[in-house]
Image (cartoon, rainbow, N blue to C red; front, side, top):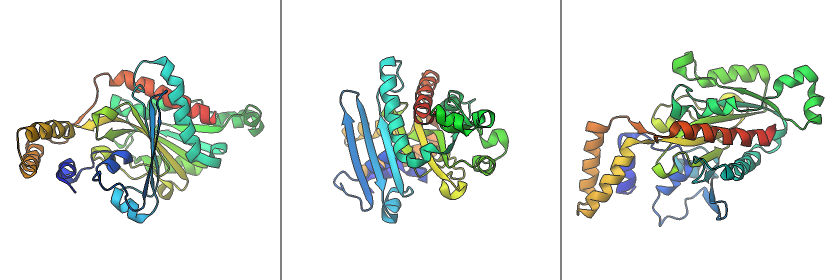
Amino acid sequence: MDKKEENNKIAGVPRTDLALEVRETFDEDNVEIQGVVLKEDYDKKKDIRVTTVTIKDQKGADAMGKPIGTYITIEAPKLGEEDESFHEPITKEIAKYIKQLAGDASKREILIAGLGNREVTPDALGPQVVDNLFVTRHLVKEFGSSFLEENKMGNISAISPGVMAQTGMETSEVLRGIIRETMPKLVIVIDALAARSINRLNKTVQITDTGISPGSGVGNNRKALNKESLGVDVIALGVPTVVDAFTIVSDTMEQFMSKQGFGDNEIHQFMTELNEETMGNMFVTPKNIDESIKRISYTISEALNKCFA
C-alpha cells in the first residue's frame, strides 16, 4: 500500500462504494490483479465510458475487499445536467446493462426496492426512483397474467422501505417479509452511494449482481442485501451523491505539501493528525443535489420501465 492509498484509509473507514475506484487505488504498474478482470469501453459520440470490473474468485475478492461478481460502472458527465438530449442515450445504456445482469429473470416477477431516506436529499435517490416506476403486479390480480403477456409488460412491484431510524427495522427484515409474501424471482435495489472522487458525484452509475450493503460508503453499515440474505437474485444499482470531506481536504493538502517539498512520511503524519482532530465523520454533496437527484431518479426509473414494463 502506497502513502496515498494509506492516507485514504486512515481511521479504517471505506471511502467509496465504487468497485472501479477501489481498483484505481492499486499501483498503476500492477496492471493485473489475480482474480480480477478489467474491461473498458468508451463511446466518444455519446461521451459515455463503461468500465466492467469482474471479480472471478476469492483471491480477487480478498484483493478488492468486495464479493465475487460483476461491477459495471457507467460514467456520464452529463447525467446530472439539465440536458434533455442526453436523457435517452443514458437511459438506453443503463437499461442495456440491467438486462445483461438480469438475464432470464427479466421475464419473471421482479421487486424493485428504493433504499434511503426521502427526507434527506442526497439519500432520496431510491425512493424517488420508485415514485416514477410503472408497477404492474396489481394488474395480474385484476386482469389475469395473460393481460401482461398480451401487452408485453413485466410483473413489477416496488417498495420504499425507509431507514431503520424511521421504521425500527432493518431493510433486510422488511424485504424478507415482502419476498416471503410476493415471491419475486429477482430483487433490484436502488441506493445512493459514496464516491472517492468529487468528479464522479451525480455523474456515475454502478450496476452489480452482488447486492449491496446499505450505508457502507459512509461507515454506517447495515445488513447486506444479497442472494444469501434474501434468498433470491439481487441486482444493485447506485449513484454516488456524497464524498468524504476528508478525501477532499487530503487531496488538496497532499498536492500543496508535495509542491512545498514535504516528504511522504510528513504528509501522512499531518493527514492522520488532521483527520483525528478536526474532520470527524463528515460527508459533502453538491449544492444542486436536489435538482440532480430529481433528474437522475427519473432517468433510472425510465431505464427500469424500459427493461421490464
